[in-house]
Length: 286
Figure (cartoon, one colour):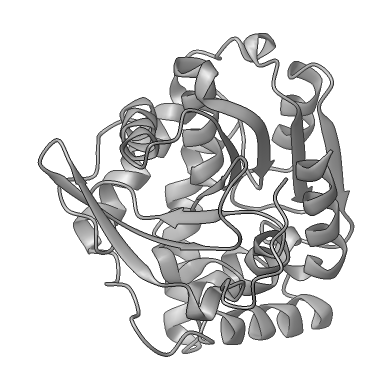
């Protein structure tokens, strides 16, 4: 862990500088904040998401103590190229990006699709990862992961009909608490007003969905090979990536820790950011 009392260190995601790095003919868009030095925490984002989809209430507390990097994988947001056809290829791209920045060891904070990419990365490039945070995600071959596309399109339709953000349906319960947490989350994503990222293209989104479906239908990975300290979290009512899959990950990754938030959906970590962010900070500092 690195601490830095220099007032010039940016620890607010809303003000994190937008950067790019080119490698192998591709340009990756990323943002970085927090004190440099020590092991950086690289954030792996969810389906259809760009740099603008990270909750500042999760990023900022981590960035107070750690060098944080968020990035758009190939073909997403402001990063160039085509979205890969498989989760494993996305993991290879992520490894290429991390190494291009000059890092030989990182901690990973992942959510949803990002958690699938993170699992593939740890299994394919184990030396690159020190600690792993998997939230709202599931393993290869996990029950009903191949149904993510159907759920997503259904909720996008519901959102269009009610003029809401699809994440309000996909990430949160539709009870009073869930609806209010959803609105607050969507508002927080607007806190950055300058240098916003390019939205994801429809074709890129469709390719991601296809990769998730393939992941859901593929043979289970040997998660027992993951020896990195791992923190797993989800809500107890995840409609996108069923909550039982978090328990499955916990059973199969030796020594992992599991937090299930009550009366919460896919975005449980965002609904309970006040509780979850300190837990994540403590886990990374341990």
